Length: 284
Image 1 (cartoon, one colour):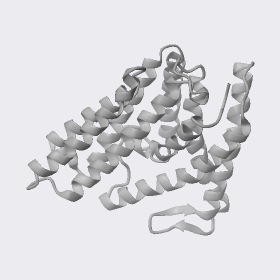
Image 2 (image 1 turned 180 degrees about the horizontal axis):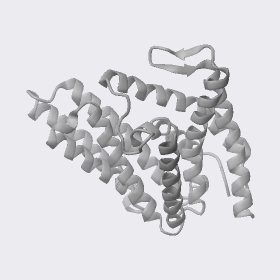
Image 3 (image 1 turned 90 degrees about the horizontal axis):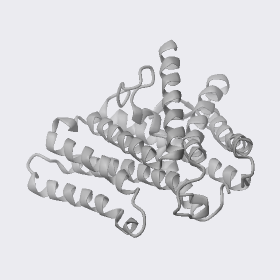
């Protein structure tokens, strides 16, 4: 418990430093997210021991860095954001042909699916952060901290709520063959916590920014959807860990496991925020 608290404390301080600096220099957020993408992909591939294939591992980490970085491009170059992702997919197809004797198809699909999911979702998070997404503006985000905390905070708070609700009220197993400790009561508690936390986040930023308009209806709707999706994201990566016969994706965060163990519930939630942010106003 002590190790977990120390790690959490260091992580919070580091995250706040990046958010504060990133509010003035968006490139800092982009670089941080790109490095996170590299770590996530590295842990993902290592789970299946694909890090032993140096050419594959290095190639994937290269694209894990480049794809989020290129999402920072602005007009008129933003139309080429998809190019690095296409080159990654093309490279995997080439690998599957050239190295077909050693590069098995199931490994190729595992690599393609996981690295694509991680890099695309991290890239979307970057786009949300450095543009004022709710206003569909290309002038740079005015609410960097809001977008980061909302995108990451809802899944993490929902997960915490599920843990405590499951610990005190859990009786009915949710998916015993995948995650024995998760319960239906915990899931309900997590959804309620994640949804209500959106109101808290909105109120806090209303106090911080002052003359802003918070659209609480949109916040609550997106938080409700993402609280549910975060459960499936967590369980999906639990299935992957079970298939790879590992407990955690890494040990970069003592007491917590790997970075991917913290982001597994977040990844699938980011596209939802992106879609809604292009359609409705969150904050003005």
